[in-house]
Length: 78
Image (cartoon, rainbow, N blue to C red; front, side):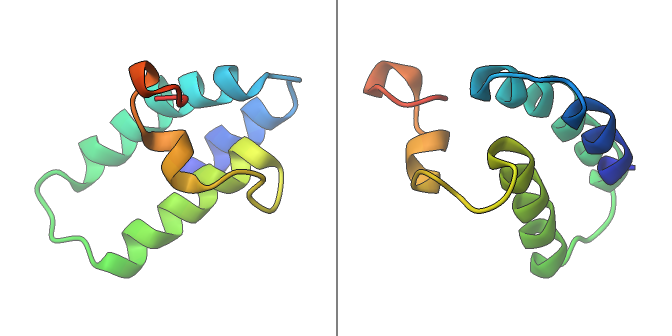
């Protein structure tokens, strides 16, 4: 499901902020909806994280992940 959404949005030339918005508004809510009542292993969460960062950077990370997830008022991407 997440891989399918990611593939649909990858075709568009989105900026990094656009990709982050897609993740926040489409991918994370779907992930949470399906896993809210189930026990999720840490490996699944790590795999989802890996897929999302791969979507943002189209491959390897180009910035530290902490700089991506920190708040905007700290100068990061939120």
